[in-house]
Amino acid sequence: MQNALTPDILPAKPGDGAELSILALESKAYWGYSDEFIKSCETALKITDEMIGRLHSGTVKEDSSYVGFYFLSEEGTHAELQLLYISPVAIGKGYGRALFKSAMKKASSLGYTEMRIEADPNAVDFYKRMGAKHTGWCRSEVDDTRELPLLMMPL
Image: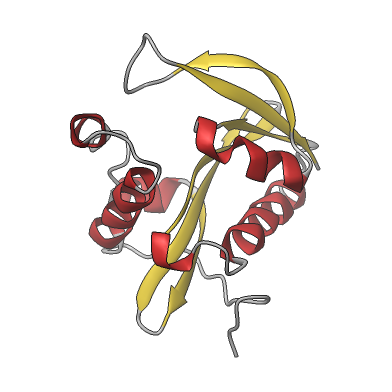
């Protein structure tokens, strides 16, 4: 039985991409970014069946709709949290924490000792509360003039 404290976290399935992509864009828009910027994020936040097959993932549903997800990749010496998004209607319900902990557990089970996170500036406080450390900056794939906080999470 799912609840906000212990939601059922299941891998994304082929065919889920369209719904997850919409969720990601709605989540990004929640932070007050311009419509133009959100439009420019569509390619970077498009979830494909290829991604679903290649990356590790976790999803949470409320009723029959997705309210959160993550994707995790293996990048040599570390795991990388590629995406973690929560629907604006589900922010504050504990899903982000549960998904992040699931991603950490998965990365650890794969033998990694740290997880790299290229964070949206609005998500930095959340990741720091989870224990991640700000270690530097990286370029945004959406706008190469924009720098994003780079964090590392010990596992």
